[in-house]
Image 1 (cartoon, rainbow, N blue to C red):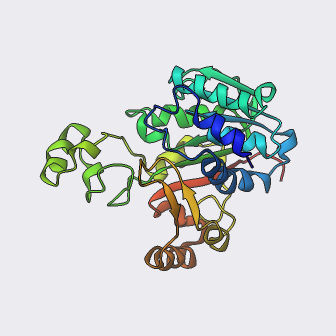
Image 2: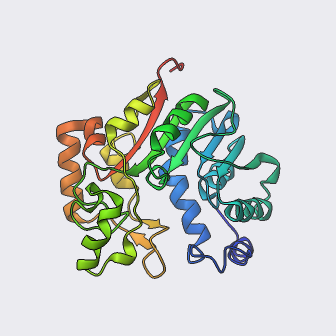
Length: 281
């Protein structure tokens, strides 16, 4: 997807190279978002005619992957002005400036008109909103004409990977988790995230229905084919190629065999493509 010169230019962008996410491989991140999100969107819509909103876009990898795959236009919204500046510079390096717009704003109060985008994505953001997930979901429900893509950890799972990984830690009030984390030497991993349930997601996206078979993919077989893949955002020395693994393959396969698309309720990640109920098929 990228030339060597582009990769080097992206790595060297001030504000990224020396940032906490500067370890991310640009080509790996773009491939990850293309294969996980953009390719699944392409099965539901013509990307060349699609306007995408990335709510909580940070450095913009998802919307950049969308544009590189032929997307018509993308809007990135984030509260982090420095991350938006980096994203805009990435877009310039990749020759995408004329098809990208970056807006400083909150996911809980999007600066976007009703039904003004075809697709609204919210990738690993809801858990960081300090209880504002319901407002964010309502906003996604408001602005998307056709599709909402959401992924966030599932509060109902006894262990989540996006925090201390201690059993049931995320069921405690945020101010009570520190002592528990301290007992196991994981206090530094206690981000005090506020996780959501599948019922909150479905309630917030009241005008949409879940339209993906398994974890945002058409089926469990399509999900399996996504592996191995590069996994960004896990930290220096951790981000890299990930395979599904035998235990997860068996557990997830059983879940799909028993529940099909309702696996959404029990998987560690609440990942799904939602289609507006009144959208043309």
